[in-house]
Image 1: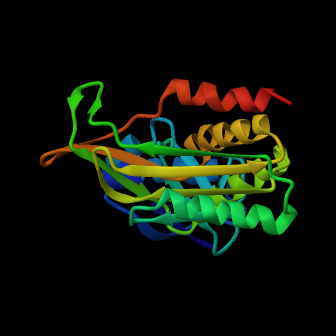
Image 2: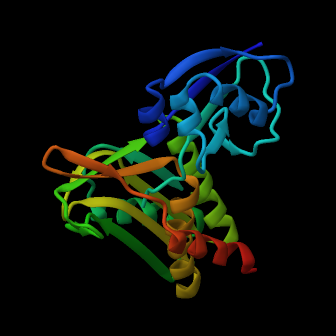
Length: 82
Length: 157
């Protein structure tokens, strides 16, 4: 299956990738995707070593969330609006 | 209820009028209190003076998360109406960044709802601030005091 990965703020700046398609095994959890992305490059390992929030289809979700084909997964640092 | 995300500055009077009109449409004569809050850009941070901030957001999710928050506040505090607006993009010192408003039968609910909206917005709406001075800029780190402010609402009934 395939999902779209989006990044924002520091996660976007460090990785240099803000929007791309990623092939995954069926029923992958977000935790598994993060482990996979950490091996993508040193930049990804650095970007994901601290506190990272995740959203699936534009809703905040936890690491145990199981992804489906076509999902939009976003990775970003803690928010600082207001 | 309404939730807006925009680059342009906003007029507090227009937002107040919109909030009141929505409250009147829902329960005319029942609203005894309207509380609004406006956030501005300070001209300093922990390290010294700044020129302003650049706000990045997640188009699509930001609007949804802000609307969800307004709906949660409305339900939790039995509001007649609620609204929120957050600016994105480059915003200079002393400009307006954010506005929230709550209309309720009594003042305590309106004050609490406005406070809740701001505390929770800092936890759940995908917005990121970068402070800039000249051609240098730095991301703003999330604050532990903001976490505490949001946790307070999670423990209250």
